[in-house]
Length: 191
Ligand SMILES: [Zn+2]
Image (cartoon, rainbow, N blue to C red; front, side, top):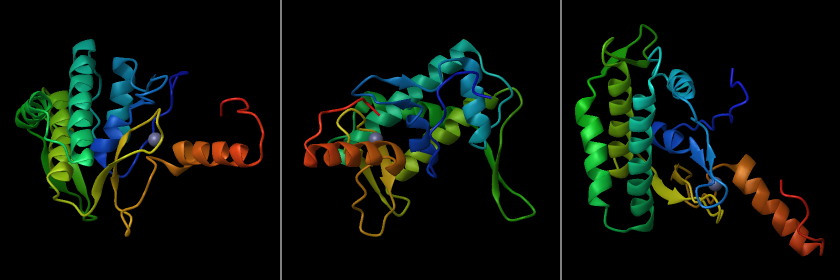
């Protein structure tokens, strides 16, 4: 249940799926984990069920999220990595002690410690960010072409030319505004 809170935008890459819990960073920002419960919900649907989260957990999660966003943005732009954000990321990665375990079906699951579940979950997210930024996976870090979004996403398209974080949000909005411009209509109501 989302209880009236904004829906999640889940992607296939854990680290950028996490940074997408804050969208429209360069426009009217939408916070998709506004409460500790929504952080717990997001972790649960992302394979990192922790039971419950405290307000301090939420603060730490957002700190990590923004550090990942800054590091991913610098990577996408080919700029030097911001040292403070790298330190936050490494700190969270070092503090987590999640174990990767194999299910009988041959799938990976994360086993989190009962007393340190949130720190362990954040450690998994930080380690995932390290892997994609360090080029451990086949793909390219990129920024959404939408000027109000500029979300970092991991482009795994064969041609590495994906332009939007999501086709059915930013991509469609861009297509609609181009259509309106071509057909001489006014700006129209925002989608
Ligand atoms: Zn976007």
